[in-house]
Image (cartoon, rainbow over all chains, first blue to last red; front, side):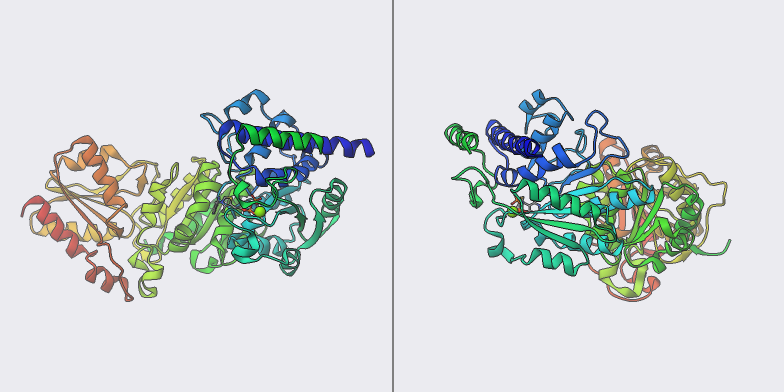
Length: 271
Length: 310
Ligand SMILES: Cc1ncc(C[n+]2csc(CCOP(=O)(O)OP(=O)(O)O)c2C)c(N)n1
Ligand SMILES: [Mg+2]
C-alpha cells in the first residue's frame, strides 16, 4: 500500500502540473479548483473507480460527473492520462474541437455536460436510479464545489437521493472555501455542510481532502453504506500546492503567465 | 366521440408504451392533474414522482436517459418550461439526453388559476432551445400518437405541449402522427387559418362563420411547430391570406414560426397573428378569457376578413 500511496501522490502532482500547463497554454481556464480537487480525482481514477477507458460506453462502468464543470484543466488531464482520448489532443484545449472550456458530452469519459453549476447531482442521481432499475452494481460519483452548494437545485437532488435510498450515489464536496469573486462564507455561508447533508438524510464523512489514505477510506465507507447516499465533505485548499494561488479568489479563473507557470511548476515539483 | 383532454391522450400513450422497459415517467408532484398517475399505478418501479422540484426532475430525467431510458418528465407547462430552461440547455439538449418534456395546462385555456399558471411563453422557450422539437397536439388521439411517436421514432429532446380542457376528438385511431406534417382539416380558396392546440377548435368555428358569409378558408392543424411544415405554409399562402392562431404570446410562438417561413421564402401573402397580445390576463373561464383577450372564433374571423380584404 505504501508504494501505491506514493504512486497516487505522484499522479496528483502530475495532474496539478498538467492543469496549470493547460490553463497557461489556453490563456484562460480555472486553476484554483483544479488544484484543490487533484488528490480526489487521482484516487477516483487511478485507484477506486471501475471503468475501461477503451470502452467508455461499457454499461457496468462507474460514472463520474464533474458538477463543478469549470475545472476542465483537471478533468481533461486525468481523462487523457487514463486513456479516454489521446494526450496530444490536449493541445487543442479551449480551441476548436472537442476540448471545450466546460465538459463536452461528446468527449469520451464525459458522462454529461456541466458548466452551469447545480445540475450534476440530479443527473448523477438519475444514473443511480437507472442502475437500480437495471440491477447493475455500478456506482455514481458527483464532484461539487462548495460555492456550488449555494444553488438550490443541489438540495432538491439531495432530498431526492435520500428519499429513494440511493446508496449507489456518492457526492464529494471539494470544500475549498473559495467561490469565484469571494470566500464562500462571505457570499452566503454553507457550513456546517456535513450536518446539512445529514439533516437531508445522507451519510456524511468529513475528511482532509488532500490526504490520500483518508480519501480512499471515505470512498470505501461510502460504498459500504447501505440504504442512503453518502457525501464526502473534503476540506481542501483552493490552489493547493502553489503558494501564490492558495486561498486566493483571483486564481479561481485566471491563467498563469510564463513566469508564474515556471514558479508554480517549480513549487509543485519540489513539494 | 366523447370529449377528452390531450393530457388524457398522453396518459393513454404512456400506458401503451408501458411494456417497453426503457420507458420511465417522472412528475413533479402534480401527477393527478397531468394524468401520469395512471402510468404510476401500473408501473410503480418506473414512475418517479420527484416532488415539487422541477429542476431536479429534469436533471434526473437526463441521468436516466443517459443510461438508456426514454424519460418523460412531466409538469404544468409554466413551471416545467420556465423553471428549468438552463437544465434543459445543459443537462438535456447539449448532453443529447433522450428526454421528453411534457407540459400540461398550457395557455389561457387553463382559465381560473390566472396568469402564474397560464404559460404565455412556453412555445417560444422551447422553439429557441437548440435541438428541441415542439409538438402541440389538438386532441387526445393526436396526443396519444405523438407520445408513442416520441418514444419509438424520435431519439432526442422534445417538448409536448398539452392542455387542461376536454376537447372534441377530431381524429380516429387510423390517424398517423408525422413530425413536420400539418393536416388540413378544411379546405378553402379565400384564406387559411394555421392553428395549434385548442385554437384549432376556435379556428374551425371561425371558418364555419366565414363560410356562412361566403368566405371559404382552410383550417390547418400545425401540431408540429418545430420542425414546421413549410410545404403546408406555401400551400396556405396560395390562398393569398394566412392567419395564425395560438393560445400563447404573439411573440416567439406559432405565428412567429410561420412568419419566418413566409419571410424566408418571400411568399406573397396577407398575414395576421392571433395570440395573447404581450400582456397578462386574469382569472375566469376559458370562454370569457378567450373573448376578452381576443382568442375566440370572433377574433379569428375578424382577422381573416381583414387579411382577405373584406
Ligand atoms: C449557475 C452558474 N452560476 C454561476 C457560474 C459562474 N461560476 C463558475 S465557477 C463559480 C464559482 C464556483 O465556486 P465553487 O463551487 O466553490 O468551485 P471551486 O471553488 O471548486 O472552483 C462561479 C460563480 C456558473 N458556472 N454557473
Ligand atoms: Mg470553492
